[in-house]
Every structure is written in C-alpha cells, then in structure tokens.
Length: 366
Image (cartoon, rainbow, N blue to C red):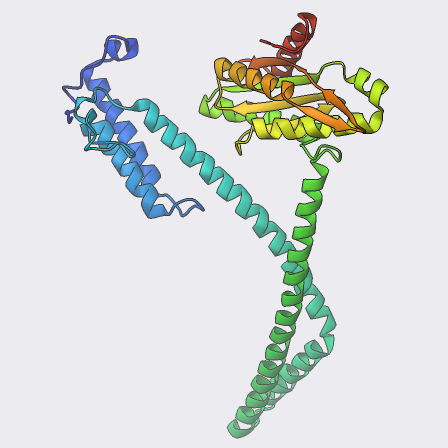
C-alpha cells in the first residue's frame, strides 16, 4: 500500500511520467503536497465544512501523494485497498476543484449580502443622525461650556463638576441614540426579510412558464450557460434533449385550444416525472417544444432517457369532453462538447430533433 518517493513506479500508459527524471519527480511531489498543505493551513470555514475539516482533508491528500496512505473516501479495510497502484492524481485534482468552487460560492454569496447590509445600515445611520440634530446641538453646547471652564482657570472643583455634567449629558444622548438606532434597525431588518421573501417568490415566478409551471426560455438559456461552464471545470458529461409533440397543431384544430393547453400540461408533468433528479432541468422552450438538460450523463445515458420518455408519452391518454387524446413525441439528443460553444450544443440537439421528425416521428435521434 505505501511507497516512498524514490520507488514510485510509473505505469507504461503515463508517457509524461516516463520522461520525468527522478529528481524532478520528487520535486513535483513535494510541490504538490506543499500546495495541498498550504490550502489546508489557510482554509476558512465554509457552509459545507469547517476550516479544520478542510485542513485534515488536505493533509490526507498530501500524505497520499507523498507516501501512498489512503486518500479521503477510500476504505482502508476494503478488499482491494492493498492492491492500489499509483497515486490518485485525478481524485486530488477533483478535490481541489470542488474546494475552490465551494470557496468561490461562499465568498461571492457573503460579500453580496455584506454589501447589501452595509448599504442599508449607512442609509439608516444617516437618517438617525439627521433626525437628532437637537441632540447634536446639545452635545456641542456641553462641550463649549466645558472648554470655557478650562480656559477661565476655574477652580478644580468647578472643572470636575462641569466635566461630570458634560459626560452625563453625552452618555444619556448616546444611549438614546443607540436605542433609536436599534429600533430603526429592527424595523428595517423585518422589512428586509419581507422584501427578500417577496423578491425570491417573484424571481421564481419570473423563471416559470405560466401554463406548464416548468422553467421558461429565459431560465433555460441561463442554465445552458451554467452547465457549459460547470462542465469545463469538472469534466462531467451532460446531455441536452429537445422534445417536440408530434402533430400538436392537429390536436388544437380537432379538439380546440383548451384541449391543446391540457395536452401541454400533461406532457410537462410526464417530463417532470421522467426526469425527477434535482440536477435535471426541464423547460418549455416555446410552443410545443421542450428542452431537458441532464447532467452527469454521457450520450448513451441521454439516449436511454430519451427512449424512456418516448414510452412514457405513448402511454398517456388525455380525456377531454368524452374524447381521448393520444400523444407521441420526437426527441433530439446531443452530448455537450466543452471545446464548442453552448449555441453549438443547442443547434446539434435541434438538428437531431429535425432528423427524428424527418425519419417518421415518435422516435429519437442523435
């Protein structure tokens, strides 16, 4: 299980390692372990885990790279643990990527909140000071009288008495002002909570299609870009499915637009049930066309899910005014290629949908 730096044998399929001199290899290992330990030493508490936990994880990864001790998540009692060969460079890379993503999310979120709170506090503090101009005048009057007593060479007892009055007056005013600030800030905090809740509800409503209650086109465009950027960082595969109801115009013409709306709702429910994971993103792209983003899914998985959707739709029977509406759907599937742009990914899925329509509908194409 354990190895030292000098005896770490590189596998034949690692050409870079085959060309690397032993001294350089040792230096690279020391540098990698040092970077991991630096990440741990200067870690800070995140929402998901504490700085201490991050430091321990970094140390485990550093020891794994240096001497081959078990890396985090590996069961040392597992049957194949002793047969492990080579260092888990990919695991170390993924750990650092996840850590940096968590740090970025934490810092961005908290700095945004801090900016909002500071802005509100500054506005409120300025309002309190303006509303208490009489107190400001009273403080200035007390300080002027104290200065006069000092400059008039008054007896020490008189100086002490005037200083006591000034301190008492300023302390009372400061306490009153602090209480006023607390009251205003308390009211402001309540209003901010209400406004945030209303804003969140409004934002969610703006992202939804009013008929199907799925995400709308704007939300889909944003998710498409987010998925593309995430894939470039994580290397995880993703598939885009474009689905279009077959002969939907005929349904509207034969049964009416109310039946058409009901059909869209039932199909939307079918999509939501077919793609139930939290990471699955189902949106109404426009009209009778829908888009589904499936993360951590290569093309084979995306094709399997498209086939599952076809079967689920074939089983739908929509009752409307003592009549029954049967449905089929055509689906285009495209796997994300991080070397291309999101628009190209969307175009590939749309072209695959066109082929599915061209080949006879009620099928999928890639």
